[in-house]
View 1 (cartoon, rainbow, N blue to C red):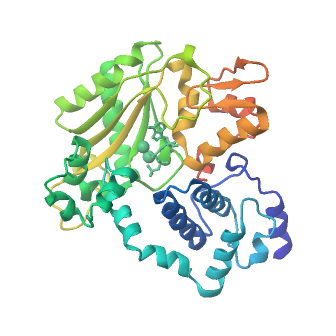
View 2: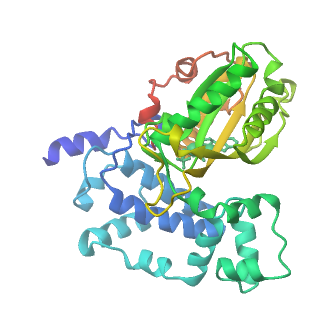
View 3: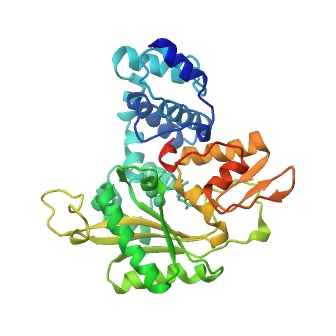
Length: 371
Ligand code: ATP
Ligand code: MN
Ligand code: MN
C-alpha cells in the first residue's frame, strides 16, 4: 500500500541514531551495491562519495519495506542523484553495470583480497599492488617484503579468521573470558559488545568490555587476563595497547578513530568441545579447534557507559550519534565523554540511557542499532 509507505518515509530521519535498524535488511540488493561503491571510493581515498553511499545504504537498511519503485524513495533523506540512478538501474535490470565493472576490476579485486588479511590496511595493500603483486603467493614469495608480526599471524590463520564467528562460538568465548577475569578479580565486570550485542548471528570477531569497579585497578586487568590465556595455551596472538586515557586532556576537539582505553586485539584458540553444537568450520576440518579474533577493551568504571555505547556500534550508528551531538546539540560525544559546549561542562552517565537522555534522543536498543 502506497500511502502507508509514504507515511513511513516522511518520518525517516537523516540521523541513524533517530532510526531503528534491526538485522533484518529488506533492501540488501541495493545496500550491497552501495557498499561496493563505498569500498571502491575508500580504496581511492575519495571520502565524500564513500560516506554518502554508506549513509544512503544505512537509510535503506532501516526501512520496514522493500523498495519497489523510485517513488518509494521519494521522501527519504541522504539519497543523492548517483544513488537514485543506481536504484533505478537495479530496479530495471536486477543488477548494476557500474557495480559489476568495479567487481571485475583488477585493482579493486586485489585491494579487497589484500585488506582481507588481518594486519593489512588499505595503505599496505596499495603499496603491494603498485609493486605488481596480485596474489597471496606473490606477496609471500617476494623477497623484498617484510611482513610484521600481525601480518604473519594474519596469513598463518587466514582461513580461520576469514570464516564467520557464530553466536555459539561467541558464547563459548564469553565463558572463557568471564572465567579468566573473575579468576583475577572477583568483582570483575564483563559485557558482550560489538555486533553480537546488536543481535547479529555472525561476526568477524567477538568484542568484550572488561573492567572492575575499583578505579585504576582496570589498568592491570588486560595484561593479567592475557597472561592467563597464555598459560592456558590458547593465546595465539596478542596486540596489547596500554591506556593513554587522561581526563584532563578532554574534550578533544579533533576527530580520533581510536579511543584511549587499554585494549587488546587477540587471536584465540577455541576448542570444538567448548562450543555448543560444534565449531563453524568446514566438514573436512578435523583439527577440533579454530582460531578466532577477539577484542577486549578496559575503560575505568566511570567511563563504562560511554565505552559500551561506543563499542556496540554499528560504525554508521556511532558516526551519526556524534554528528547529531555536534550539529543538533552543540555537544561532543566520543567513547570517553559527553561534553556540552554551550554550558562548557561534562555530562555524567552511568548507563547508555543517560547518554541518550542528555542528547534528547529516544532510547534505541542495541538490536536496533544495525545502521
Ligand atoms: P563485526 O561483526 O564485523 O565484528 P562489529 O560491529 O562488531 O561487526 P567491530 O569492527 O568489531 O565491528 O567494531 C565494533 C565497534 O567497536 C564499532 O562500533 C567500532 O566503532 C568500535 N571500535 C572498533 N575498533 C575500535 C578501536 N580500535 N577504537 C575504538 N573503537 C573501536
Ligand atoms: Mn565485532
Ligand atoms: Mn572488534
